[in-house]
Length: 261
Image 1 (cartoon, helix red, strand yellow):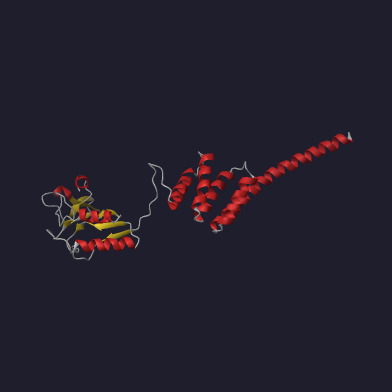
Image 2 (cartoon, one colour; image 1 turned 30 degrees about the horizontal axis):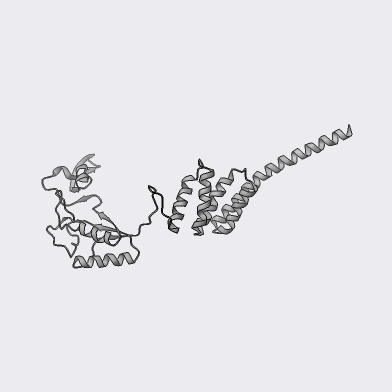
């Protein structure tokens, strides 16, 4: 009887110890993860990688293993060790295809491959950093000087030009053009006065030098193009009369204008 009681007590104590150990393990994993995240946010990514790796090795059944796998990739990315970042991101996607960090892991892979010069698969969209210069006036007297300015901007790191292609009354006219009107646009169209058709030349120069070109139009309305087209007149809401009224200017956002310009 005495031996039976001692045996039962031993089994009870052993079961209690196992339960306590499991509970303590769960708590300990959370603390380890919080500590590893703290290292990451403090920029101590080398130590963070070791801490996240310890979670994966010591607690393979923990729900925090997937996040730790992703965070190792993020640590390598922050350290700019792009080749080493690829594997943990790829492992995360492979092991946790339904995980809530899959999209972030895919972005990490794209960034890493772009940094190490690995071509992206056909149809995938890479991340392009745009360094833009918004051009209101080139301040040059001929088109040849325009190309020199464009090359100087490229050498300074610019990869995208946003060029003004409208002319409102009172704006500075490009000195190298032969203006036909005081106001209008700098591209060929039948729906607005053409000051000079130079957008094509801008695009040719920009593309020849490897730059992207965006045409910059007025943000809301223009003071031209209303002759014989009253339906394109801007309108404004009068809060006193609570009615729409005709306003000064050519509505560039009229559906017909958007399609034709």
